[in-house]
Image (cartoon, rainbow, N blue to C red; front, side, top):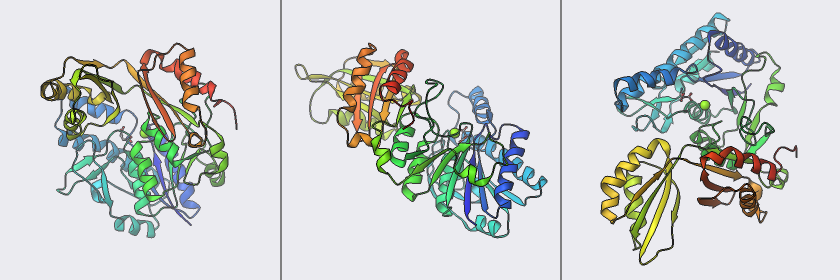
Length: 417
Ligand code: ASP
Ligand code: MG
């Protein structure tokens, strides 16, 4: 008998029939003698619907109230799943984040989990119940409901698995695993059977939307084995078969994994690029520009400072497109005047394309193969950043799909290795 955490995404919870299917799958695990904790997302479309209502009332809804509202989506789906299980004869109980409690900091709409109290969950498990814990939410020190940011149920599930020392965290979703790239862009993309934790961390941060990045960070920190697999298979498929499907995120890197130079291609359209022109090139300029941005809790991604000409330089950086408005405000009202910058240029027609692979550590020339491919396609590179296991470029977003397809081919990702 082991303790398993299972997370079900919005599509998997999308209708009464689908919830019944989730219940059947959970019941199968329960009947096999496992202790099961389920972490569901809201029914598909529900979070968007709720946030849409909020936006109708205010362009910038009060963050506390927005979390109060958004958290109801998971409360509904969790209760429905408990009812479905009970109707199928499986004892089950659902809890909202605050009841567990899942303790978070107080940054509404993007809270971080600090601790999860396991006592109540354990009592139910020991009493033979399936325990359902709402994804996406928690409670701050003052008892306010918080949410973890879009896609946050993944993080809830991994955090619950870490806190209760589950033997695996299964992320059931509408795809059957993690692919070498998005199959909607490259139909020849392949499912990876295993991916190293580090690669997954890069893929998630670079725009592969399969898992919320924080869930991967959590998995790494607490060494929780995570498997991404399909919830659209027959719910009664044998357990062994289910456990061998999907993509396992592993902490053990073997030689076979390193033999592949590039494991995946990630991309993201959520990019916005800012350039401050004619900034005086003096000590402290980068800090004067990026300090206020960081203080406003905006993550800066790529940074580029040009060679200076007559003591002046251009300074560019990218942020998530969601933060573009706030960044623009800060630059034009505060930062620009303070550093004596010339024009502030904003560009949201850019995207980021990245190649990822732990094999890049031991192979030379990988980045140049990427640049060659892009040049052959006539794609101009605007910014570049590298780490040990990835190379990312910022390019015009109208070339995104072309770039991804060409790179997928260059690195032979369509071929089974
Ligand atoms: N329901 C939330 C969202 O749509 C959280 C999640 O599904 O992971 O972002
Ligand atoms: Mg998701």
